[in-house]
Image 1 (cartoon, one colour):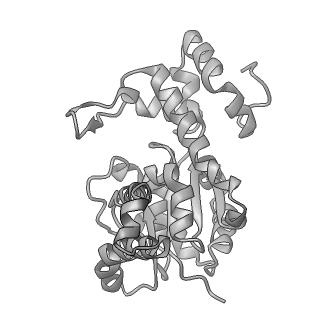
Image 2 (cartoon, helix red, strand yellow; image 1 turned 90 degrees about the horizontal axis):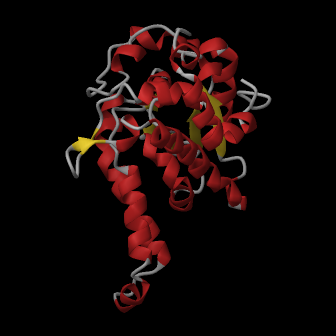
Length: 267
């Protein structure tokens, strides 16, 4: 049976989530619009509502009622855009989705969960060039100004997304895709992804940069308007100082090895 369930994309900022978003949006069956940032809010709302269980019982609301409410909230917010696209299936990309993959899986148990992973050293280099601001304080996000916090941010995002694998029912619903693989071997990498999300392969997705779309001032807008390029791979080799190397190894060196970016810490 064809899977028409919403596809959720997450991963640390500057990992390639926007690139994957435009690739998916290029598929004839999939609409993946500008970053709505709403899925993490709905997931958190569901958690908060569950914490009010005694009061919910008084209002005769069950866990299934809460699940249905949160499902409908997301579908209602995205329905018009999906209908206007004349496509059949929604993909929702917000990097922070990864932190909530466990809750998203509970709300949408049949949905594919896709984590985009990129070499953490390159992620850190890119983060430290960003001018992102925390909307609640109007101050720069600390992980765009502090090397150590950028390393911790990347590590935490990757590991948080992976927690969903502890849920037995998530088997076959979660996949990791590396930015470097998309760039180096796009066709084979993406064929594997489309097989996972149960969509037919269409080579048109390789021409994603030729399609005009609303990128809503996303931070990677300029990059994803170009064809795939590899110049951002291993940029850390030109930007890391010896002290930065040592600090990254201390914080996230083991994860780098676990993800097969390095064989050991002798880099």
